[in-house]
Amino acid sequence: MEMKAITQCWGPSGREGKISELIKSEAEKYADEVYTDALGNLIAHKKGSEKKIMLAAHMDEIGVVVTYIDENGFLRFSNIGGVYIKRLLNRRVEFANGVIGVIDTESDNKEMKLSKMFIDIGASTKAEAESKVSVGDMAVFVGDYIETDSVIISKALDNRIGCAALLEVMERASGDNDVYFCFTAQEEVGLRGAKAVAYSVAPEYALAVDVTDTGDTPSADKMAVKLGGGAAVKVMDRSVICNADVRSLLIELAKRDGIPYQLEVMTDGGTDAGAIHTSRDGVKTGGVSIPTRYIHSPSEMASKADYNAAVKLLTAFCEYKF
Ligand code: CO
Ligand code: ZN
View 1 (cartoon, rainbow, N blue to C red):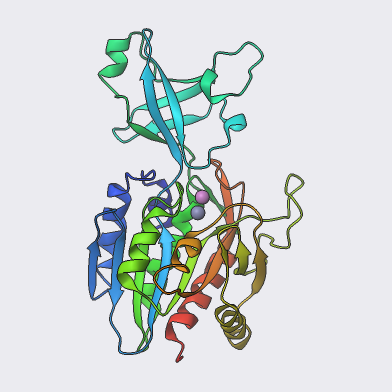
View 2: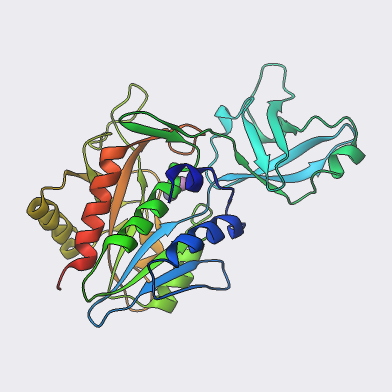
């Protein structure tokens, strides 16, 4: 799957239909069965007789939702997931039908409060606006795909880069484990899809595959993870303390195969691992993350080498004889 297609695809939380279809078209080439559940999770199963393993990558992205349309055709909106309100000025958003809007604020001093902000879709009346969008319609941030020798820049690398990794692992991994590749819905609004799919799959081992923050720019908080430092083996985030055996195994496999890795302690935010590890009577859960700068902005940046390292490490985990 082309990274450009998967990152640029439209799919905010709860509206994962398009991205699910795109991933499904690729997953069907490698999995024994591909199906969806009532929440919109997409599950690709590669059958095996040994351990039941779940890999989870969320396919939803953050966005906005229209709450009100005023007399002059301007849209008021709320956030879907963790939107940095102070950085929204003059950002572009795109609705499912391709309508593009620009975010601005009514406030004189450019005070950045959601209640003062609006989306301008170029309509001059309420009727004109309503012919294009409705209350309840969602939009995602516009952020073009750019690739250099070393990095990828795009909107929604969180977490389409994780989805791309799962597809690549699905293609490569052999062995006898029974592996469920789960492309989850509604992570950005509270790990909702993963909760249902962890229950239905009931895995013995699970890994959440997502992006993680880095500490390597002038704007970043102190953190050991850096771009280009390898796949990040999650120790913990705000939603999970990873199973020690799973963490140790990932490190052992990285060392065995010469895969660059680094340890991740993310002090802000959670991942699907949070919902999975407390499912049923508990699941041994870890995480492999792809270090990403400027998370939840339209210009997220990740390293191609880190991505490749994560694919190798995840493949080794899926093939491991427990
Ligand atoms: Co996110
Ligand atoms: Zn994410």
